[in-house]
Image 1 (cartoon, rainbow over the protein chains, first blue to last red):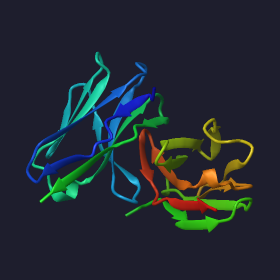
Image 2: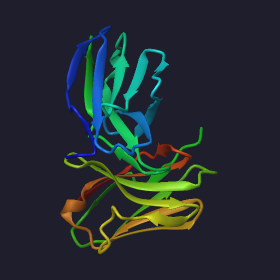
Image 3: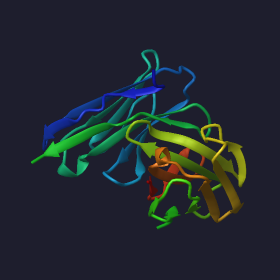
Length: 109
Length: 111
């Protein structure tokens, strides 16, 4: 079993839709969590950190549930430019990031 | 706009050849990482440096891979000899604290 697991998708949604991704992690010692975004044939880029209290950045909301060991990302009012692969990431130390395999999102006109 | 740079961006080589990939981290960052990404395995950490010292290379095949930081502006990843299963995208990342900034990657194909 992978330490960080995600549904690979693809999630195919129309513009303007709300879409949610979940991610589960197996190591309860995980300290920090992040969502990275990776466009096709590009490098991963940090989208947002995930806090237990939840955090919001514009149309994006991230939540962490430590009791159930899952992380979520909610995207409201989807744009065509949101089409990408979203990587769920856990950190077990100050440096070591464990990446999920990614969830692919396709936003159609 | 500070960025991590990597060279070459693409490399095609034959099995058995030596491959050297280079990375210039963002000035002032004290951590450097090498990752490998494949369709099957996703992103895997190969090596980690802090203040130029190698602290973790447990993810790297020791018999053929080596990673070094000869100075603060250059990190290298070498594969000798290369094998077809090494075909992947190799990313370098640098950072401060927990955020890591990735370079554009080197797409390696070993025939």
